[in-house]
Amino acid sequence: MREEDMEVAIKVVVVGNGAVGKSSMIQRYCKGIFTKDYKKTIGVDFLERQIEVNNEDIRLMLWDTAGQEEFDAITKAYYRGAQGCVLAFSTVDRDSFEAIETWKKKVENEVGEINMVIVQNKIDLIDDAVVQDEEAEALAKKLRLRFYRTSVKENVNVDEVFRYLSEKYIQELSMVSEDDSLPLTIGQDVQNDTKNSSKDKNLKHKNNNDTITLKPSKKRTKKLLMNSKCVVL
Image 1 (tube, one colour):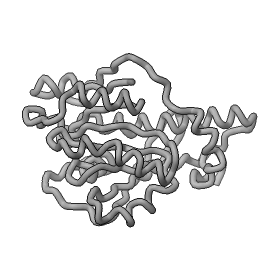
Image 2 (cartoon, one colour):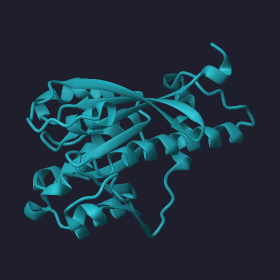
Image 3 (cartoon, rainbow, N blue to C red):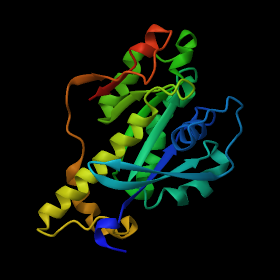
C-alpha cells in the first residue's frame, strides 16, 4: 500500500453503567439507526466507521462495553490499546452520573491517560432529569474533560463526540512527530505507538473557559434540543 493511501486507525472505548445508551450511540454513529428496545451488551461489541479529519482518512474502531460489574473481567481486557474513551451517563439515571469517576479510573488503570470526553445522553428526556446541568458541568471541570450533551434518539451531537476524539488524536500524533523531528507516517499501526505514551501525557487538554453551542442537524421541537451544548472546560 502506498503511503498516501494509508490511514490512521483509532480505537475508542465507550464505557458507563448499563442502559445509558452506549450501544445505541455506536449504532447511531456507525449505522445511522436508532433502536429504542434495550438489549444488554454481553461483554463487548464492536463497530467501525471511516471518516475524514483534517484531510486524513481515519478508521474509527468503536468498542461498546458492558456496564454491569459481572462483565468487568472481560471488558477490562478490551480497554487496552485504546486512544480515546467516551464516559457516558444518562440524564435519567443518577447512579450512572455518580459512577463516571469510577469508570474513568477503570480505563486509566489499564491504558493510562488518554483522550476522554464525558457524555450526558438522553437529553430528550430532560423533563425527567435527575442530574442538574450545573452538576454535570462541575464534574467535567473537576476532571478537566470536554463535556457533551447528546440525544442518540434525536441524533444530537453524536457525530461531534467522535470527531473531537479523532481530531485530538491526530493533533497529538502531529505534535509527537514534530518533537521527534521525524515525518509522521499516516497509517502506522496505532497499537505500536505505545512508545510515545510517556510523551502523550504531556499533551493533555488545555483548560479553556468558553462554551460552544452545537446546533442539531435538523430542527428540534424542544428548546433544549435546539440549544444543546458542548462545554469546554
